Length: 228
Image (spheres, one colour):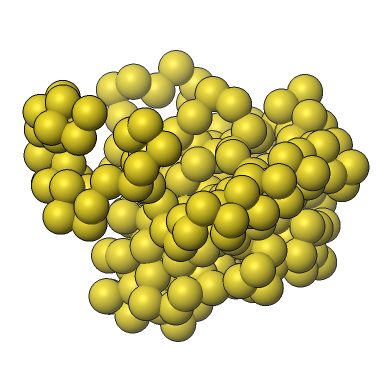
């Protein structure tokens, strides 16, 4: 699909160099539609072959196909990429996702709690400038995702170079493990069983006040004063 924003030639089977044709035909056979990125790379057979080898290596990872599609849909929606979403909705269906799961994935959610935990983790990755909070990592681990998979999803969501290495180090060395354990111990000691939870002068707000604040955040100041 050519657009007026294109600054590079977007090749197809008629315009691409002969040495790029085999890879292009393979991409068309597997996806049915040629992504613009691949069509641009086709102008350099060496670059296109290198990208194809890179993609081939990724297929040997441990990330389930449906999960990859969910993450891609969520990130595509976050980036407001209509082009990517138009392709992903088709590939997600081919991977076995129903229309309801596709719609939920675009909102970082799923009926499957394991997948929902993963998507909350991905949301923390793409919406913040810093690595995701420990609570999101621990939630994903408890749902059954391995550290290797979480690093893979972080890379799929767009973390790279120094950011990805910093994130990997944080996970493998357990940088915040003691902090999480301390916070959990304190929460258990003070009877905190969910989040968010607000204390005023060491007294927890009543459930109705918490509900009121979640429905109307502007009510916080009024509720705070009423509980002093």
